[in-house]
Length: 70
Image: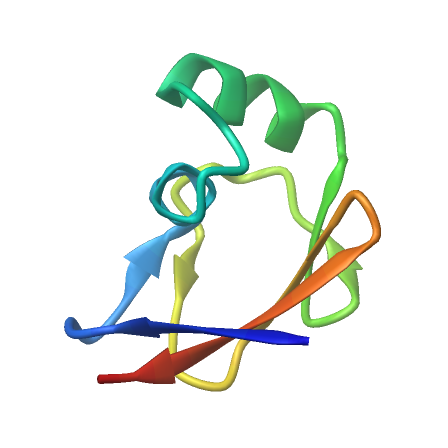
């Protein structure tokens, strides 16, 4: 599991996918999320604006990430 540190209170799911380099664009991130390819805390998440906070766990294409704090 890789820790992704943020220096804000939260990050939106689509922005997280772009930040980590998992998606090249917001449109691609939106499509992946709407297709149910991303899990947040073990549950499929289809809202691209879902706010992620410190401690949230994200799963995508067999990779797992956790939100940390800078």
